[in-house]
Image (cartoon, rainbow, N blue to C red; front, top):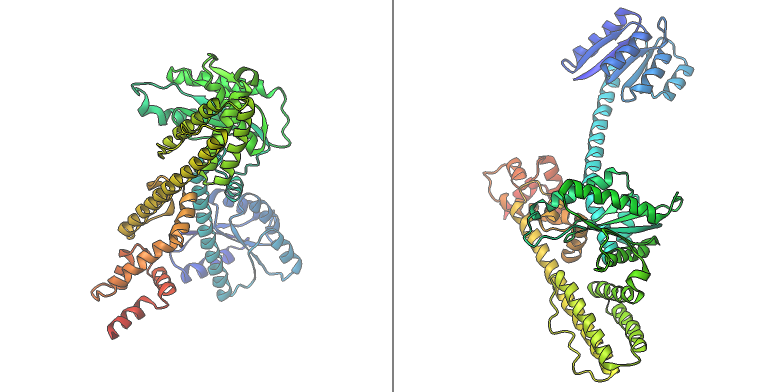
Length: 522
């Protein structure tokens, strides 16, 4: 039911208006009355009416003044100005206050009912709009953690395409200027005694970080590590050293983990860097300092003097090569390798044996990286027959091409397999309520990435494919004349027969009835 407040100093006017509306639309409204502006304000606050009929001339607080106060607190109420004076000045001021309509006394029944019906339509429209807005906000709030995880992985693994990154940035309202990375390493347990609790541990640690007010992105738990990217906006001023600020926060996180789970984490901190590339470099630094066995401190801040520039360079080359290879960018990978090989030749004074050993070690590391991703390149990277530097260079190039070929086939196979799983699920569950988010979750892909690869492989969007499956099934069901169109509508996953008919006609250019009649002719 809708609530109507009638404010008028004449009781007969209030009663007449209520009677006029209630007789025309019985059981639709709850009515309340106010004989002056003060009572109208009080009742508006108590009852929060959907519609208010406000007389301009009343004793005490006038109608316009009452409207001003009511609209400040209850902007959702639809107000109709009622007056015996046809003054443009009143109407102009009322419109500024958001008054919906204007009725002159004596009120005609047709005008009153027309205004009420229009206001009900507006109220219902606003409810639908509000519901849609809430659904969108809910969907976005559910996607934000996935987007946060995805952008962290993009930075860490260098899987960044400009368009993707900009779109995710826009949703996250993130503008990366400069920042640093922190990597939290939880202790491993050979018996996996706390393995069942790892996800819960991750959630509580992430919540602690978020609740602390730290403006940072938090990666998913990868193995036993959580990565943070702290971003400083362009206009941000650091009140004390970044190192001190980062270390203090790391100590808080370390203390929380120790207190909550009685385990001692190790935390690595990278240096302040600029832009996305800088954050990735900072992540490498934080990871590197954690991997340094000579540093037994639980909280470690990266220092080139402690880890060595050569080790940093080697790690960068490995990471860059891995990134370009997994992105199937063979030209970039070969360019990186040539630069590294030239430096290697220079630092070893052209010692073939040492160069062969370093190159072999590089490919062993690449094999390990790829193996963690489920890709095996066993047999690639054997350089025992290369006895000259140029032979070694050429053999490495060939190996890089072979690696890209293996990765490409593996990616295609895995992607096609996942899409086939998704299609099979749709074909088996088209009668249920299916969303892209649900199907993406089922095959362990982010909705954003799933949408992109589905369209790339199938040549159509997820929604269009689901519609195609449902319409094709409805065509089969239309052969059975014992089934009504309404029954067919529900059986193929639609809840609204009218909507089903519109979709069917859009796809086939015939309504379901026309299609069935056409089948009878043939």
